[in-house]
Structure formats: structure tokens, C-alpha cells
Image (tube, rainbow, N blue to C red; front, side, top):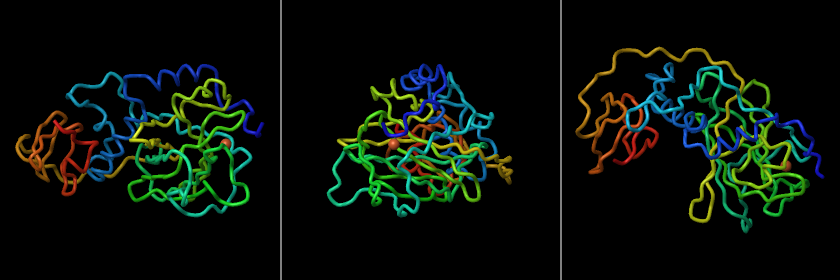
Length: 291
Ligand SMILES: [Fe+2]
């Protein structure tokens, strides 16, 4: 036993919820948040005050069956126990890989939001995890590192898939702290792990989405910190509405379902937005997909 097996992190019924979250065809809240964050990044002034706009249309222009709203007072990311292996003063680094580090490569990326569903920059994220053999480095700082979210509220961690150790399912520890705010201590989990069913700390609300990427893994997780956020900036001026279609052009207001060409490739708009320089379809997959 390692001291992290104390029950208390999971309420009755949550594992059922987790099974649904992991397999549901509906967009999970995180998925929607992620798309919304990308839209918010893409439209920092025009749309941040209207977060629902980015969530009301699916790729085919119809409303998705589940339309979670980011501004409906949804719960923040739940806390979990720190466990016995946290160490302060980890090095600042986004990659925990060192020369010769064994293990399956893993990236974890995502955004940090406040309760108003707007990304927060400068959030301290301190990660620690077991190595491929399930061991923590308690003398040095292997597999320990902190970083800050960028101007868009995004983070990216490069590491390996942590190994298992007795009493626990696979997990990554993290502390998240927005400037001048309390620390959120929690843990992130991997879908499809057999031990998720037996680890009393496991919480499906803390599941990352994980996909295979040619021998490595790419995980995503968005944090929601318990930080109130008022209404966003009011849009100034009126977007110039132009007929959709034709070649993509900055300054054009596109609606979900609109089709354009860019660089000889056809794209379909996923979310309504006012196109800006730098938001060319290949650069903003949250807004455009190849037709
Ligand atoms: Fe742990």
C-alpha cells in the first residue's frame, strides 16, 4: 500500500457515469470545452462573451444532441488527494523525458479554464508521476516538472505512460494554480484501464481522452478551476457579413456548414466565427475540417 488507497475520491454511481463518458457517442463536456477554447482563442474579442455560440452547431449545421454549456455553472475539476510522493521545487520543464528514458511516449495537452469557460494564462501546473516501472523518484526529480499555461491558457506535457504500482490504477498527479488563487491538487486517469474499476480513488470526471499515435499516446484534458469569470469583452463594431463559399478570406463571417477552399483544399466550417488573419483553415482545426 502506498497511502493513496484511502477511499473518498469517488461517490456512488460515478463509475457508471464514467463508463458512459468513456464510450458515449455524444461529445463529452471536455470535447466541447476544447472546441470552445479553440474558438475562444480564435475569436478572443468577438466571441468570448458569447461562449454558447461555439457550441450550438455541429459539423452538419444541426444542434448536437448533447449541448453542454460552458457557462451554466458546471462543476470545476474535482480535487483528489496529493498522495505521499509530491515534492516541491520541481524543475520548470514541459518535457519529463531524459536521455534514454524508457517507456511509451505520452503527450498530455489541454486548456485551463475558469468557471466562465474562458482560458486562463499563467496557470502553474506541477506534474509528477511514476516511471514506467511504477516507481516515484523521491530523491531526485525524475518525472517531476512544472510549467505555466501560455497566453491562450494551453499547456502541453511530454512524458511517458506511467507504470502501475500496487493499489492504484494508472494516473498522473498534478497541482494547478492560477496566479494568486488556491491550488487544485488532483489526478488524471487513463480510459480502458482494468484497475479503474477497483481503485477507490479513480474518478471518471478526471479521465483524459487518449489516442494512439503511431506507437506513442496523445492525451487531452481540460481543467476547470473554481474561479469566477464575469462576462467577456463586449464585441465592438459589426462583423462584415459576406456570402459564404469561395476562397477563404479573413474578415468573412462563416457559419457552421459553410464551405470554402484554401490552398486548393475544400473545407467545411465547424463553428460560426469571424475569420481573422492567421485563422486559415489548416491552422484552426476547431473551426474547419477538410471537406
Ligand atoms: Fe501516485
